[in-house]
Length: 262
Image (tube, rainbow, N blue to C red; front, side, top):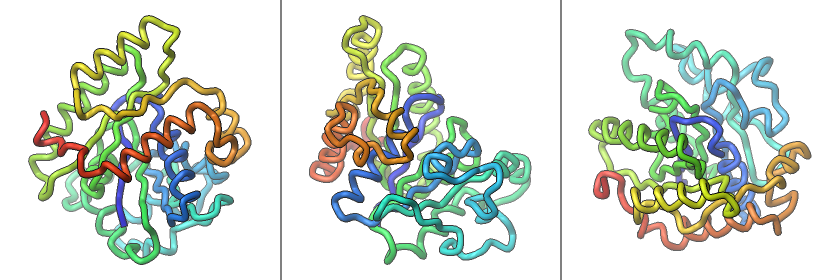
């Protein structure tokens, strides 16, 4: 079982879209995929037809003293091969509850240990805030994907994320492979083209070969309640994620460890 996290300290850069699209493509290849929503806003949970404001059991329960078995929290989705570990709005209280408590940074990692025989891939969708759940995502994963919108403010967010990684990885026992994924690219605009150039100049070999374009088909797929690859496999955005997935699967060993490349 491989655990991939999708994270950035800036919102609106395509994290949930990245999780949903890659999950769909992996499932279409026959993989058993678990998607985990670690964001109190619950966008991933809502994507698969669940209401984070009223859901009875969620990731939140794993952080309680009497945590239930993680298997009891999993939900089936309408997509073959994809299961969901949902979020609830109660997760917004985790930061306050975590004050003075030790060991909460490994909750998700420990919970996933019991799922090795059930899934081939676990994709973690993180909130755009450095806190308990993002720390859990970074501790649990072996590969980190960092979507970054190709615009100047998003690049500043990526710089903050890079600094955060440098601090957090000092306490990590094993290296972490990480790759930057440019998203929402519009080659018709000077700003987008220049931003992509800056991202590649700043992060070099840590930038994915694929660049994810702006594509209204992502929004249409969400409205239809389908993964983008199931809604329209020929969409430009889906094809770009297909290229990204090919790099992750076939050239995984070439993705640098973040500690070795910063």
